Length: 242
Image 1 (cartoon, rainbow, N blue to C red):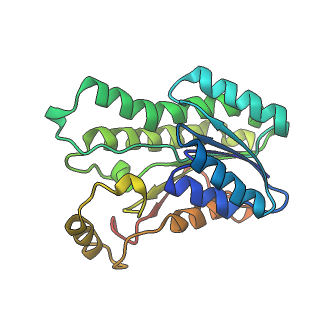
Image 2: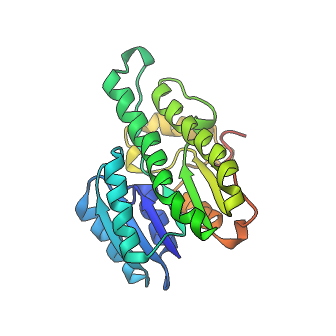
Image 3: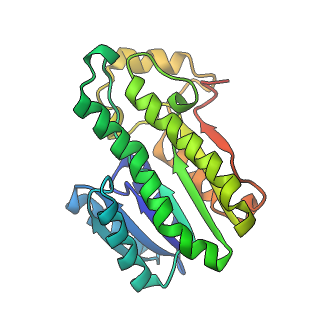
């Protein structure tokens, strides 16, 4: 299986890369920064038997996306699965959110998803097969106070994905969304212990998520076991939004 994972140097992206790394898998791991970490993750995936290529770049730029996909195509002759995990978070009152904050949030969390999907779809349509998994958030399903920009971008990911599922379903392409809850990743390091404890107490399973929880859900959606699933939004939140 030929797989492109964006945000592969992040907590969720790295866990997905390791979960899908196996003999016969060909991974292309993208990251915006953190060359050393990206290479360490690539090495751990190679140790599991996967072929791995890496690429650093700002996927908010459509030209960068096109160049990375061209490199991937030259190496693997096509793509079977696209997994978009790249993202940033922002906790601010809407009245304090600057134009730059807004543009960065939409660029990283939504535009990059649009650009990667647009880049890979012509080949997937030609081969009449493909799978796209976009990582949103539980706040994309129900907005969060003081996270309006983040909630808007992640809601956009859901809308884009569900529209795309209808558009490309006749071509044999599945498009689904993962909506993680509070996951222990560096992106959530700004939360205080008290804030994390409050979220945990409101979670029916009474714990916070691990990146591996999201990786297992992603492995399912990318597998033949999910062959009749498209346009779905799968919460991975311990029941928080139930």
